[in-house]
Length: 311
Ligand SMILES: Nc1ncnc2c1ncn2[C@@H]1O[C@H](COP(=O)(O)OP(=O)(O)OP(=O)(O)O)[C@@H](O)[C@H]1O
Ligand SMILES: [Mg+2]
Image (tube, rainbow, N blue to C red; front, side, top):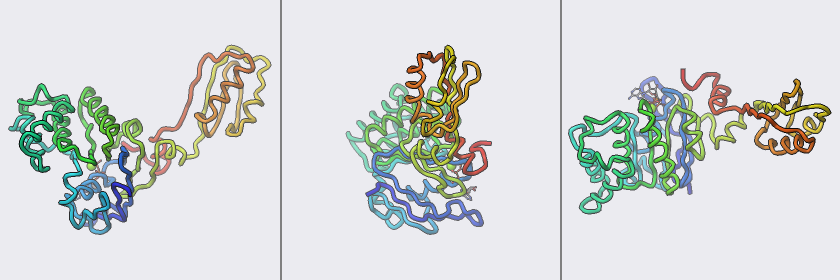
């Protein structure tokens, strides 16, 4: 049974159709990326997943429980890092974490211990008695994350947690997400940075105009656009080079030589790179340089929508 199952979710704000028949299924332990441009409907979807917003239509099941009908039951299993930082500026970092922990039902010694763990996890242990008023944007983000994981939720939903912060905090957050993923937490990670979801997520859904327009792991998504890739190689010499051995490979559409530069056009450079190298070495040539020109997920978005992910 999927840990999150969404069927035909719809949400309108007046005349704006923010979420349009969105369907989604996420398995336990996945780090799932929800990526799309501004106004695609990511935050609206997330707000419905955590019960902050009621869908106009559709169903949401978490652990098989219908949360549109009874979202209170599921609250302790979910942590939300909202897009806009939600912390109390005049309470210390520890007080903030303990406050959110208490909302999730923690108390007493257990609450204190779990707050300490969350402080350690977010790299704020030394700052626990300071008020976030003095914190940088990145530290506030990390505190926001600490508040949402203090109760060790089964599912952590993060809405653009790295927007507008310093590189150090960004790296800290990205490695925290990886750690959570390894420890078995199901993570839903929203971003409009393709490279982030590409490095973090086991599976990615591309959202546009309130719908998921493509879903899969990064290779599956890249395979959606049947773009050609170019493998460019420089060899030490190419005299008597038998090009036909390369061009007869299944997934090679052409192989040409320009001096010592070899250029191979293929639909699957990763799959056949080994074969290409073996053929070259068998012909007693040395490879001086290799350059792979493979499509990125940005290319996938561009190809599917005709637009760039960011303006
Ligand atoms: N409270 C609201 N009232 C009216 N319209 C809203 C409200 N919240 C969102 N919208 C509209 O719904 C659409 C989807 O917004 P949403 O915030 O879900 O997008 P998003 O993908 O999270 O975008 P971003 O990347 O900018 O955070 C947008 O057109 C937005 O203007
Ligand atoms: Mg948003």
